[in-house]
Length: 183
Image (tube, rainbow, N blue to C red; front, side, top):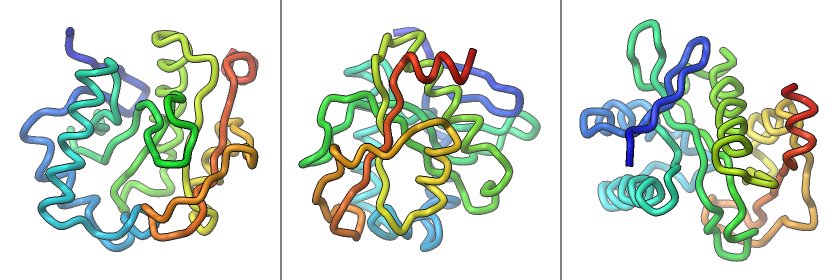
């Protein structure tokens, strides 16, 4: 499979390299970043997460890719696509997701990377719909989903405590709606 690389104005979304993992975990495995993602990961959880990201790429041709800032090559976090696999959720649906280091918040990087990922989902992978998951208290996350044109899909919300809350809320956008916004 050819190496994945997609550039935006300020970012590069790309396949993971071995040297990415240490700076990624150092910058994103913090109480603030992990607050709504189940808490800070121990070594076993980090290893399992890394393996899942690599497995998604191998199985589906997409994953939550490394996000690198063009101007200095710093790994800001991840953003990309996977097939939803949360117990009780819309399993199998194309899912967009992101996790950025705290010093990258509020600069538009997450929106830039997520919009690129949605373009890729619809154009390259032919998705008819893309979902995004979060928990209700994570206002920043669902706020971004709304800014991307996604709408709350209460019919897809589900019970799951993997991220520390009882209910995972689902936002979604269909191909036609994204094309209208993006076009």
